[in-house]
Length: 157
Image 1 (cartoon, rainbow, N blue to C red):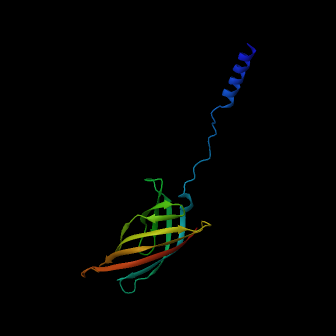
Image 2: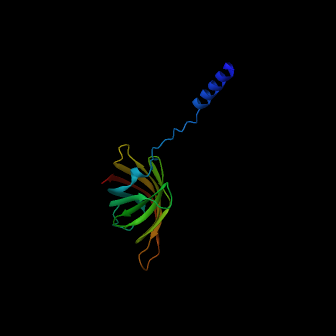
Image 3: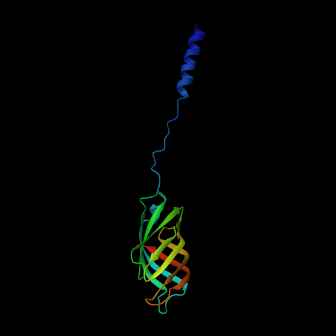
């Protein structure tokens, strides 16, 4: 009888010692887009063939980046400069970089832009680069094709 009691106590002890571990991590998930959100200022530099004579190739620019409401990985990039006044592009964030979804911008110049952006390790600057193609048209004249590359250097405000 003592052996049965000892086995019962030992079994109860083992069962309670092997309780399910409820160690849940209550640390909120970090949204990788947060580091990009904000106002950024700098220059867009255009290296495009076919631009109208006298077109500036360095454009002082303000960019406002916000989290997209349509996807948990996207950011919305509102570009404001001489040619792209409050034009919005969307990009997909992966780590410290984002990739633009192709965007068509229509101003006096019509362009389709592709590119990427990379944030610095200190989170205070972004460098972007990409390609552009499109055309411009002076009223009464045929459209002239444009193509080439673009870059930007932006600093967080």
